[in-house]
Image (cartoon, rainbow, N blue to C red; front, top):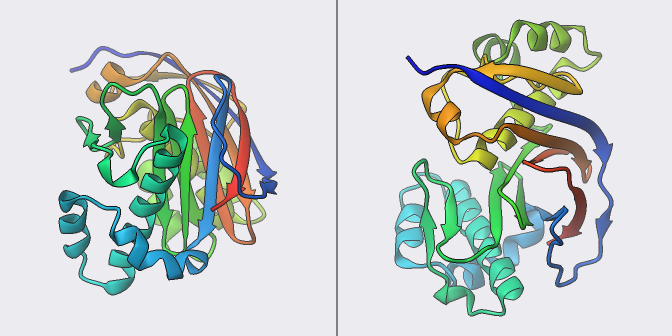
Length: 248
């Protein structure tokens, strides 16, 4: 059994994101730059973005049973390649994206950190100069949030969600925070999330999940945002950060 260790998670928000006009933007060391798009805004890019993907990405896209899911994959990975190519002044088709131990993509030998997240009707790409995690969820999602919370959330989080004016919205705020932290450390979604608490401004925890203990930093900062009309986004990094949002 893994030995437990301390983890501190600072949380803030939700706050309203201000979408800036599209621009070529690179993050400075103390910020995250994020591009957001409802899927409907990217529909006319599907053919062009498919041409940016490598053979492995196209094979993964073809595995989706439903057209909508396949198109979301193509749009998300095409947008990621477009943004990375612009940031690095490189041909997006030539970027050799590799995947970490638990599937997080990276560019070997390149200092840029990035994360892609999607939900059924929206996409988010985040760039930073430090390990970054990003998660987007739609308020239109239909889910049994009470049952999911009882399985994945801590008792304090479950109680806070039940007491909230809008329990589904509170569930999504907490869920995106958890996902963002796990993606920042590169471990991905774990079956056991009870040791990761994100319901308070300051969360001093003891974690014991073996991979989480091995891969997580000692501290994470998480900021949650309302983006557009019906999306919630959480961003996580080891150090404090500012955020700039752009419409993709």
